[in-house]
Image 1 (cartoon, rainbow, N blue to C red):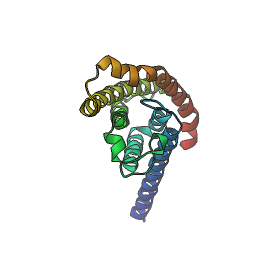
Image 2 (image 1 turned 180 degrees about the horizontal axis):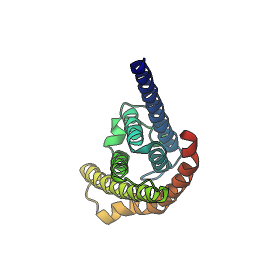
Image 3 (image 1 turned 60 degrees about the vertical axis):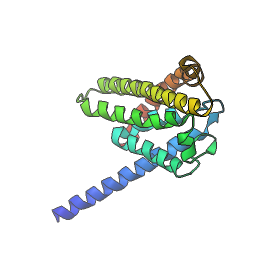
Image 4 (image 1 turned 120 degrees about the horizontal axis):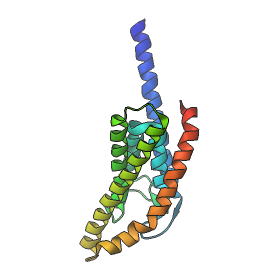
Amino acid sequence: MENKSTAERSNRRKTLDLTYIAIGAALISVCSWISIPGAVPFTLQTFAVFSVLLLLGGKRGTLSILTYILLGAIGLPVFSNFTGGAGVLLGNTGGYILGFIFMGLIFLLFEKISSSDLFVRKMILSIVSLLLGLFVCYSFGTAWFMYVYMKNTGTVGLSAVLSWCVFPFILPDLIKLFLAVILSNRVRPVLK
């Protein structure tokens, strides 16, 4: 009887995890469609990535990000401007999308090493990990952009790429992070 109960709880937990992961991937998809076109479109993707990690935790959040990227890679129109396919990931801005994986992994790492039960300390570590993840995402995406751009178009300087792809996004991304923290603090109690 005890084994059956344990198995049922395990199955319910797995089902709940899969549901949360799917909802997280859907949230990132919907937020990527809300965009302002540009060389690198302004979207709510980063807001969704921040929110998913803060709400679902490092493991489920990172799996949501991976699911989102895999859905896009197979051709579903989950990326900005309702695009999809491996061509988007292999294009100029694909590195920024793939950089979300690093955000998730860094968040997961910080979550694993954070042994504090204090809410304030956990929140500060979460914000620090997201900021570090955003920096790594910017760095990876910029290196990717430069590689693809130079391969297809010609030489380009780092300062030009930063002015196109990073500097205009820093303040909006910080605002998105701030809003994601506020949202997650209000929604998290409902999820538990």
